[in-house]
Picture (cartoon, rainbow, N blue to C red):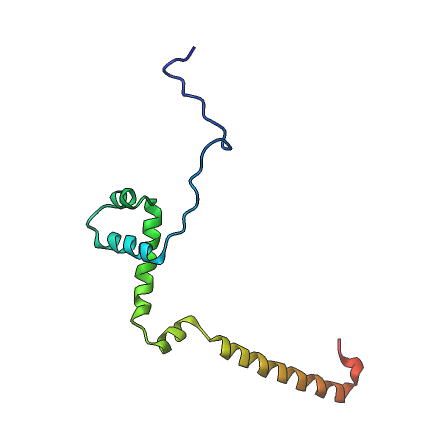
Length: 117
């Protein structure tokens, strides 16, 4: 007998339908993030309107605000904030390889080939 204080049985996780993973376009993400920045609607209203979880809207809003600064930077400022370029790193690897080879040859001349580990 089913009493009012009992809950209905819950189906096992395997039987529950999961929503398929959705990939949103950058344009859609920007549209949602801009709507959140405007502040004309609450996160809950935007989540319902766009059928997106409120946490996702907050993430996209934060990303947009962080990237907004970069859009006004010059290319030199962007590379300065992101560290050395791949070309610079490859040049450094080449330089260090040459130095390593030079030092190995010098060590061979001084102590012989058996001095290597």
